[in-house]
Image 1 (spheres, rainbow over the protein chains, first blue to last red):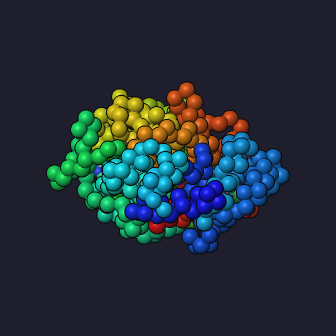
Image 2: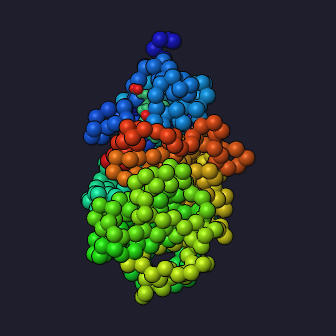
Image 3: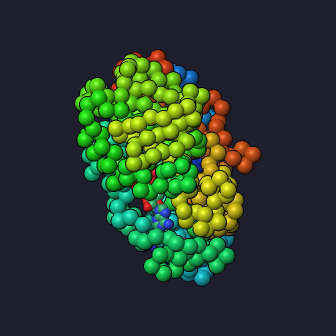
Amino acid sequence: MTGRLPRTVLAVLALGGLVPPASAAGPPPGATSCSGCHAPAGRVAAPSIPPINGLPAADLVRAMEAFRTGGQPATVMDRIARGFTADETRAIAQWLEALR
Amino acid sequence: MTAVRRRAVLGGMLATPFLSRLASGQAAGRVVVVGGGFAGATAARALRRADPALAVTLVEASPAYLACPFSNEVIAGLRDMDGQRFGYDGLAADGVAVVHGTARAVDPAARRVELADGTVLPYDRLVMAPGIDIRWDGLDGYDEAAAQRMPHAWKAGAQTLLLRRQLEAMEDGGLVVMAAPANPFRCPPGPYERASLIAHYLKTRKPRSKLLLLDAKDAFSKQRLFTDAWARLYPGILEWVPLSQGGKTVRVDAANLTLETEFGSHTAAVANVIPPQKAGAIAAAAGVADRTGWCPIDPVTFESRLQPGIHVLGDAALAGAMPKSAFAANAQAKVAALAVVAMLRGEAPTEPRLVNTCYSLVGPGYGISIAGVYRPRNGVLTDIEGAGGTSPADAPPEIRELEADHAATWFRTITAETFG
Ligand SMILES: Cc1cc2nc3c(=O)[nH]c(=O)nc-3n(C[C@H](O)[C@H](O)[C@H](O)COP(=O)(O)OP(=O)(O)OC[C@H]3O[C@@H](n4cnc5c(N)ncnc54)[C@H](O)[C@@H]3O)c2cc1C
């Protein structure tokens, strides 16, 4: 039963065009702000800002930590990364990892 | 699998409002969005994406949107108006019902919006994002007729092109006078970006001309970065007159292109008056604007402090430390859409974190920025300490160039997310 449960739920959700509540897998605080600058890959012409959707969470956490401490050069990410705690950053990273 | 077992799984996994919806087979609710700018268009899309069962109707007065960010480049002849224009097909493709019309009245008790053509739209929750209106009673002598002689160009469109044509028609040696308002107003760094780019136009096209920037304030956004750049790029061309030195414009005479300050008067060849502003008129009609002309909101849900069931976003809102910017409008809309969906389901909205970044061009290839990260605290959106701030004062030209590139990327990204 345990192994089958998620698949069962998905199958049920597929009925009648219903979707799970956003809050179940909704974005954690701060996560929706990033897409103001970071477009998904291929979405805009010649972006000077790299896409971050789908980035492995550990890489994103490492980059944010480096921006916070000045270990990675930045024009703006240092100023943004300092607004998030390590926990908040981890949650954002996990959510972004699943996006395309 | 039997129906009974299916129910058991759902009951174990999902919240009750979803179950009752499943039982009744009804849509999750009706949301009407008034205003299809950076805030409203983003909200309409985000609502549909967060819950495709929602019926979302966007009411927008114009057939196409003309974006203000980068419109200062249009004024300075660095860019065409075509690059500012965005349509609503992308929203329609997301299942938003787009209605082109003007909201005239809101009945918060009956939960209905009435359009100028008499159409009535009932809602469960209303999102209002009408942007700004000019306070035509805010500056002596500055009315709608005066704006045809002394454009404000603070809403992109005909006004933007009028100011550009006036600059093009001006003889070399002419005096351009700009008037900047007191806080709060749309786009705090906007007047200073505009002054920079007009100065660039004068330097390259009308080198005997000058720009006088009359200011009703003694301090402004990214001030050090702007004034350093002006000293380097536009010496002898751009003069800023702060409040304490007679910068406040108290009266204008459009017929003679004269601006009167507390200390004297200036007659211009071209005058750009950025007048005091307020939330778009429908906000007052709906009872969500307070005596300041702006709309107080709850910082978690963006629900009006004055009318329950109505959420106010973007320039119209009093959003604490967040400035009135396109970036902020888009960011607020994404947060508010999730809150609206949660409230319709009877769930508690999550406490948000928000980001804002405003890029400005001081000249071609010379960008600067100011950023902030915000959280609700004591009922208002507050700066998170230690985060945010401006680009460094001593950055080398390569960094200024990178930031100019990032500004352009930001514009392509945010307009794609909002309208694309
Ligand atoms: C010169 C200039 C430069 C700027 N540069 C930048 C920048 O570089 N970066 C940045 O982040 N911001 C910038 N801004 C600020 C930015 O333009 C605004 O903050 C942003 O447009 C706010 O979005 P909004 O959705 O709240 O309002 P708006 O964009 O004004 O949208 C409001 C919409 O509502 C519609 N509407 C109003 N009333 C009704 C009604 N009753 N019925 C139906 N429709 C209605 C209007 O037609 C309009 O389309 C700049 C502004 C100016 C003037």
